[in-house]
Length: 160
Image 1 (spheres, rainbow, N blue to C red):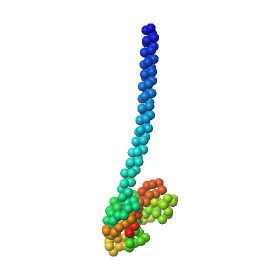
Image 2 (tube, rainbow, N blue to C red; image 1 turned 120 degrees about the vertical axis):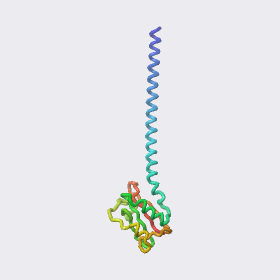
Image 3 (cartoon, rainbow, N blue to C red; image 1 turned 180 degrees about the vertical axis):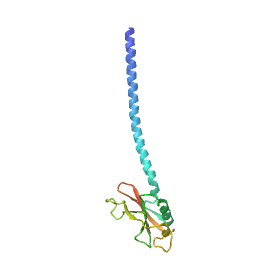
Image 4 (cartoon, rainbow, N blue to C red; image 1 turned 30 degrees about the vertical axis):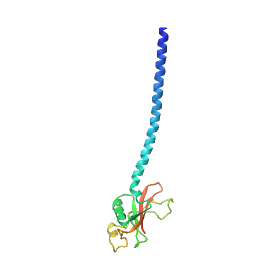
């Protein structure tokens, strides 16, 4: 009888250990899935936050002073350009970098930095006698330029 009790106790302990190991494995797997989901959500949030600096310019109307502020804000950003088209200069002028917007959106090369030299300067944008003058009270339609991989490469401002 004593051996039977010991065998039963041992078997119960063995099944208890197997049950605990199974519970731990199930919890670990579900925790892994939750972690992956949280990482994906965090990545999405990071992407949204990095794009918020540009969303204020996405298909909105802004004032000339906001255009000038954008020029100052993004002037030292590497692979980025700002084009301003005014009533005096219907061709427009690029600041910082020149971005390819001559091909249709979605085409190869759209939004790519062309390597051409940008000709705009903050000095001429404030000079009322210049064709590049940005009237602080003027209204401009703003547009964000993204390349084919979804990276923001520039802003376009067209005076109304």
